[in-house]
Image (tube, rainbow, N blue to C red; front, side):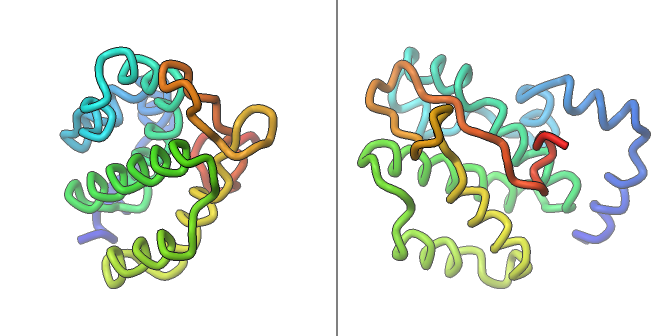
Length: 159
């Protein structure tokens, strides 16, 4: 079924692909029937607004990649929520992803993602950095730092 969904996505016209990119996070979330991540909403309206402003592109990138890969709604939602929770934990403590967090990710998605997909996502999670090139840290939850999009497989990575 994943191959079928990927084939359908690959048949999108260039205009349809661009509409998905131009539509931003709301269109990407709508495609998978997702709402604002729970880990964001429980932190309050101010944080949710800051998240939307500072991290929406990254969530949208993940959702667009999920469409291209043909991941189903359940897997995509779980990956998005896991990634958001991981990013917030990393930001709260101010240190990179730990080996235990990496092992948890691998265990949780083993058999549901190809090894290559797991590796790409882990690289992407590790490379999330602030604009100054430092690990992304949310010292003030109202102003999340911008993260670079430098992974070559990331749909919005610079060419």
